[in-house]
Picture 1 (tube, rainbow, N blue to C red):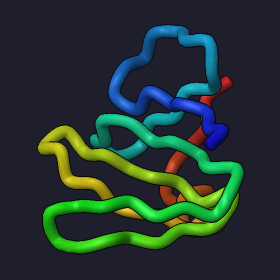
Picture 2 (cartoon, rainbow, N blue to C red):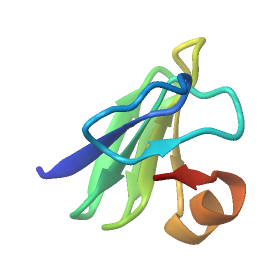
Picture 3 (spheres, helix red, strand yellow):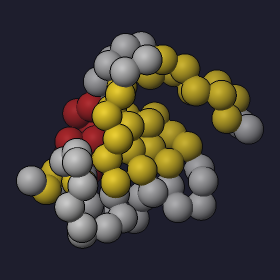
Length: 75
């Protein structure tokens, strides 16, 4: 499963584009449909959606359009 990792909680440069707007731990943009098992059940996502893991460890799936509206990509 291919994906790109984005660090959301620092201002330092990384090998990928960096995103920062709300306090999140990490975001992964997925390139294929996927499912993620969590303590509260299985989450489903589509290609180009993001898996978000906040600083407390909570995992969620965010659709591409919602992600692009909520987060700012820093180049």
